Length: 434
Image (cartoon, rainbow, N blue to C red; front, side):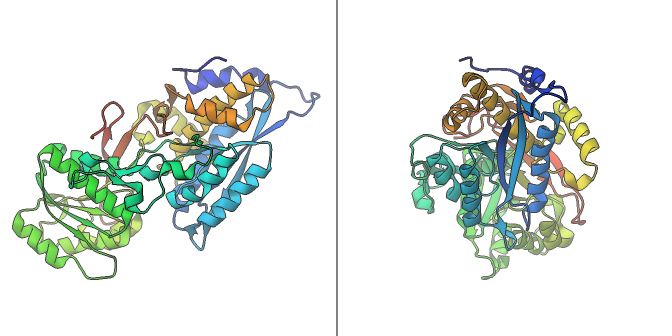
């Protein structure tokens, strides 16, 4: 069977174009279904619904693949406004029960993924996620030694997560993602702070949750490796105490910036409190991860000190890529409203393209019939050099993207509705920071 290397999505789909030329009198084409599991309601819907739109747009523009009509089966894994692992597992079981479902796109949340991966793995159902960044979904180390100020690996077990091997009962990988991992978010913030803003001394605060602590540790480790200094680190559980004393001591010690690992409301309230201690706005930058990025809650909580908030997102910002302009233009012409497009729209579009390419290879290998699900997984694992709108797409042996780009955004000001602006991208595709 042939292996696809550096081909474009367009070339892939042109090979199947003849499949869509049936006349009205021809027999109905067979159906191939792709499952989608995302938090389509609740807080994360503001990002997940535009991601679903990206998936829909790809299928709308490529409705037929190798003689099969492609049908999406979307499911909502949110309950009471939050992603819910049990509901996600239920959704996956329903997809598995339908033999025409060849693979799924999703989920959005690592907690949901930890529940779904073992179920899908046992059934050989491939998963392609456009938005999960927890390292332990694909490996055994949460924070590598070189990014940990203590200079030892923080294992997934140490962090309280099952490692990748515990999630895969078949001992083969069925989970792939187009996002980078969280330790690269902290690293990218440190790279930008040190190299572009000339921050040499910083203080670090986390929300005492594992996600926030991982971000904080990787920022601290990377800044130190670059030659900077972390003057102090505080774990502050939301709702318990405040950071004012710590901020004052860090100001006295000469801190030029604050990094926060955690979510929007608590973290950006710290940003508001900084105004009475540090020079406001960009004079004292405030960094965080995707827990605060582009969130109106963050801007509202920071109030008048919203300028100078920088946040990482572990994906390529397609809107900044000239090569993506035509696809984005066509999407917006099709979907109309501005709110239909979001940061994950084109990442999800590319996730669909990657899956189509793997399905095409698997179908051809099966003589034009629906392939075994395991074959789709095998073909996904071989993806390399596929030209997508977000860059060159491929996966490493663990299922992580080889297009390891982190995008940095800055809050536009005090208006919570204003879009954040892209200020930089840090590319670790060739060299990891550890």
